[in-house]
Image (cartoon, rainbow, N blue to C red):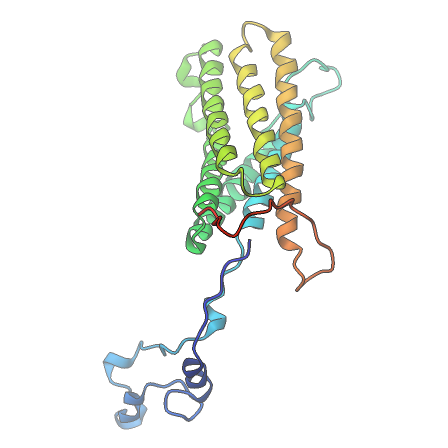
Length: 271
């Protein structure tokens, strides 16, 4: 959804075109009393024209940035959870080496998506702010597991069961939160519901795999791969939804339908 653009009155626009002093320049009238050599009195040295220029108040739609940042990071990690990157001699391995996702998790899925959430706040979209900032924070938190210097895993004293159980709790809580987001988005569109629905399943299977990783190893491998598959599908859906936000009549003839739900005149948009 594109951000609203504020209207401006004709008088302000006329003033912008002609300048404050009707000379085409945006110079405060008080600067006409400059001292010798054109020096401007101190109170006006940092003064900027207060005339409204509508071009400076346009706000970009932050939704595509947040969705695509989430999509790319989730896609890469989902592939690793499916076993991508494992050597051929270890076909039964569960998780591939995921260190390559660290940069994406910090800068794109984490920072860029968090910024998109802040921009949604500026637009006035409560749902977008909560979702993008939450998943941006998730990726930053997830990336911390990959920093050996933090000693997160070592803090469990080599107890693999305790560590995997803790990670399982971490993931299942995100599953519950995503379910809340899914319910809150029931009146948005099919694309967003697909993203959130698949993400609920991905978090669920990945968390279960962590809970049983030390007690039912073979089953944990299969469950973890199922979670990776749902993560990849979720990423593809998020990429589609984000791309749809970029496909505007101003830039292309291609349109990606989002599957908007019909609403009655009495209904209002969720904020």
